[in-house]
Amino acid sequence: MSAKKTGDVVLDVKNISLSFGGVKALTDISFDVREHEVRAIIGPNGAGKSSMLNCINGVYTPQQGTISFMGQTFDHMDSHQVAVMGIARTFQNLALFKGMSVIDNIMTGRNLRIKSNLFWQALRFGPAQREEERHREFVEHIIDFLEIQAYRKTPVGQLPYGLQKRVDLGRALAMEPRVLLLDEPMAGMNVEEKQDMCRFVLDVNQEYGTTVVLIEHDMGVVMDISDRVVVLDYGKKIGDGTPDQVRNNEEVISAYLGTSH
Image: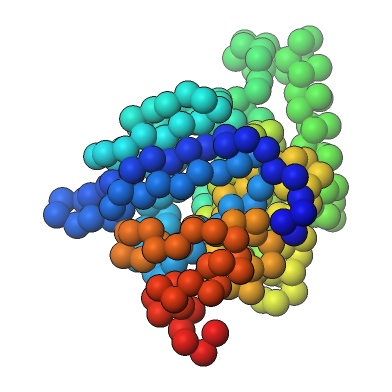
């Protein structure tokens, strides 16, 4: 895995602290993400992993610290601006449109890239029609890539959970992100579904060249597919390095992995 060539730092998180009332969710967290790598964030429940992603994609505003993306530094990120800059996100509890088909759900990821005005879009005529055809063609490639051709017209709510997760990934890919934030993409999956999702995450990283930031509870998955791992516990960083370095870190072992590992 680590023979893969990673590039310069694209995302740099510095001294982020976040509190809700008197409760500290994150305390002075710093780490960076390099272009083309798979960067995992792990830790027990309540460690602050999702809060960290929420700071990166503008859902939460930290009280302290900065986030730099592609050389621009922000005290806090704005959700729309984050998407425009090229950061996409999947969610732990799926935020899909259950009554809409697979293809229409994935098409919503193209909204930022639609240039024609509402008038032409409403008429579905002329430039708007040609533009929509181009976007649909792009989405069809994603559907092929994720091997869900058989479900293109199926309402997402009728699909098994593992396939819904795949559609969620497809919608994020439709945004053509530089950085893809995955919040527990394998939660609730059986072994076969996890293996499929691992393969897709690695393919997204290697074939599309997309940088991946991944929250995941399954340690086997994390150790197999990550280039570097940052470990949180009670909102503090307790480890950061390659999978092997993290696996052998005493503080991480006692906090998370258990001494049997």
